[in-house]
Image (cartoon, rainbow, N blue to C red; front, side, top):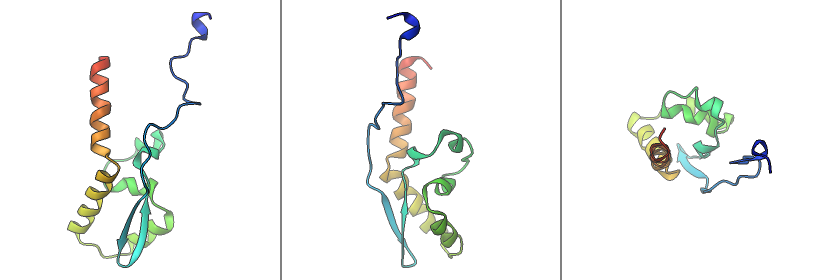
Length: 106
């Protein structure tokens, strides 16, 4: 095989290393499902400035619109975000990636 044929990673055949159960919550009597932030397209990730903006890409439009009309105390929203991010191990996964980058010299 010529060196120009060498492939170090084939993303077309790569499988996701870890799957999570869909996160579900109840807000004012309505069940809402929120997907894994790791499924957000990288171009969309670049537009996220706050954890709350994850919901733009991980929640159905219907649920997002409904949630925007609800009165929700800040502490409840904080609890939702904290539990959601913990469910998907978001911080742990970020820390793992940063550690991998360090080991590779990035």
